[in-house]
Structures are given as C-alpha cells and as structure tokens.
Image (tube, rainbow, N blue to C red; front, side):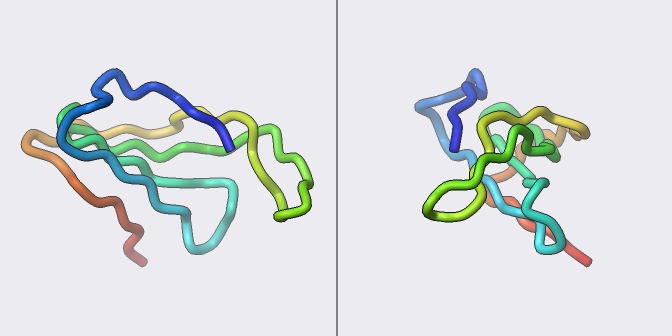
Length: 75
C-alpha cells in the first residue's frame, strides 16, 4: 500500500484497522502521539492481490490523553 510517517515512529504503539463497511476508510491510533484518526484511502489501483491504495489522508481526528494501542470500529 503506502507508508506515512506518524511523527512518533519507533516508540510505544500504533495500529490501523480497516472499516468493516468500506475498504476506503481506516482508523489509525497512535499511542505516543495520543490520537485516533479516521483516514480516507485514495488512488485505488487494481493489482493481482486486489485493490490497493497509493495514498490516504486524515478526515477526522480526536486527541486522547494516554491513548491507544489498538484501533477498532464499533457499530
């Protein structure tokens, strides 16, 4: 897919989880940064493995003190 620096690499924990209703969205948590972001994946390309995205951008963010090793979606 693609790599984006979070600015806190090499520390505690970051996680990403795909949205269960769409392959165009993912939630990203960054423990040392103390935030959770929803990302919209962009520039889809068909590959032998299926659709892969070449870019993405945050569309929502919440800062949470003492945050987050794992990311998940709740209905």
